[in-house]
Image 1 (tube, rainbow, N blue to C red):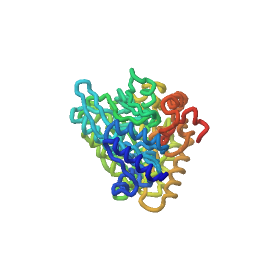
Image 2 (image 1 turned 90 degrees about the horizontal axis):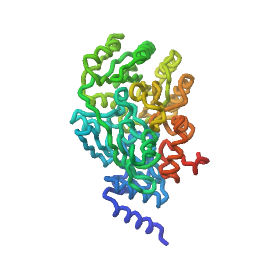
Image 3 (image 1 turned 60 degrees about the vertical axis):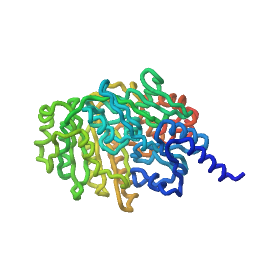
Image 4 (image 1 turned 30 degrees about the vertical axis):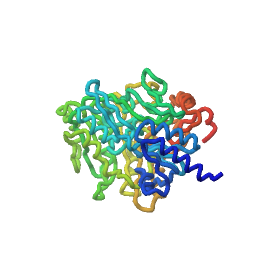
Length: 458
């Protein structure tokens, strides 16, 4: 039998079943379609399916399973370790699915998985509404939400996953189901932090909240003052009101100056916000003070220039229960020894509403107040080995002060032990859920939770 004929016939039938597009190697758009945000990831899928609706996703899952292909799922494509693509497998590309609808009546928004944070906020802010998002506008909502969703409004409104009222999901067996507090409640629990392990989400129904002008931006100091700035940040964040979320980053400005910045988002009364953040503006004084009343969408673009698409990246992240002097010294030493001007060390404090949910109420378990950090190398030269080594050494230097837990959206490709540690007390329940909804581990190109039948596989 001519196997190439059989394959071509199978692809032809697959194409005919879709509303979207099938892209194969050798076709004109293949090279652009296979690219992802992280330029260090250079993979060549056998098939890329650009889905436009849930029907396409169902057909794609069925095709991948029947063809025995690895299945990668791409939303915004922002995955640091490149888990949204693969070599020789099937990429289910959800980026064309960008519809957002808003109900002012019940303050909710339905968004498809190809929507970015910027797209979601643009649509909801037109009605004076918003939900908690991450920190960069070109991040996809799907990966952010499924991994938990640390972001600028978490002190007031909780994590992004805490604000999902319902998911529409294509499961491993090709069914389209709803998951919410009343239907498939176990799946609803797992999707709020459990990543892409249980299916392909084709729609998110978010609870929205009134949000007008926020007080946001950053104060910037030279890196030579990093220790005193970090001490200020530590003291300042010990008792934050829910309306205020603060982050800190050590990076290099576009004109080559190593700096440290404190970034803030205050989503309450602006005059009260000015009083709360006054200590940050008085300290120094800073080189630059860019804190001012602004639309929430403006804050989301503030760090975009530091992480452009196409640059090469490598990242490791973890959790610090406190910013003691030893941790501060390790952070500063790492920033000063950076091997590339495109590197970034950043951290933010999980607090407020996000910390008042029990660790077992959702799959996301990191509910105590703490600081999440990530160390990112970015490069445009051929020095990958030394840049990756710098990240590893910096990460190891912080391990004396860090917990074993980690935010899954800040993990690289680090294996089962790190995933297990990230989910802590929720891990066994997640295994049971995985075994129920994806016993063959069809969805394994993620921060993978293996079903019971695959526990012996690493």
